Figure 1 (cartoon, rainbow, N blue to C red):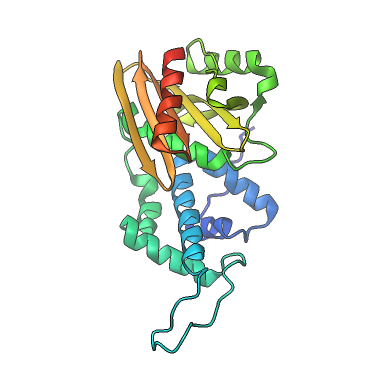
Figure 2: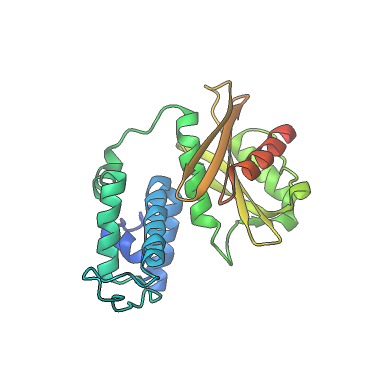
Length: 255
């Protein structure tokens, strides 16, 4: 008996997903597909960011070009329309150098060979997909921490402990198994009293011995990542660089 592959997800369907126009059942299927396709998840997050930026941009009354007073106010608080989606798509094409072309060629693009090249993107994608989840952000909750770290550690091939970030105000929510470069990866999620969330991605790659901390910022999400003893670590969150650095340092010291 063969397992039926899920239906492919088109670019138009991803736009509909961003706009909240998919039926709930199909939206869940697309969400699951995005969890297995971090590059597509990153693009979806960028579209959402552009939607939010445009709504914020047009929230204030713009001046009329003829100088005769304010232009009529538009209702940008409603869910994004197809017209707004087209504007966003055009803006992304200008800013990102062709998102539509990216999606069309994603399946043909070679996967970077180096762990350091893929870590920040995968970490950011997982953060964007799961940090906003209310009911199912993780597979195994913090109340089963021993089972969680034992299970994930076995899958990624190393003894694993969940870093203690309590001194920084963050507590463990739980974790889940995620794909990374064709291998299992471990994702741990943390949350503070203000509802801010962080994700930590840990994945094995014996071809790399070590790197210093590196930082990337994209779409409002910062990521510190490093490689130590053949394992990659990446911390992602919508926090300032300084806060993330302190958290990343704490994680590094505990591994």
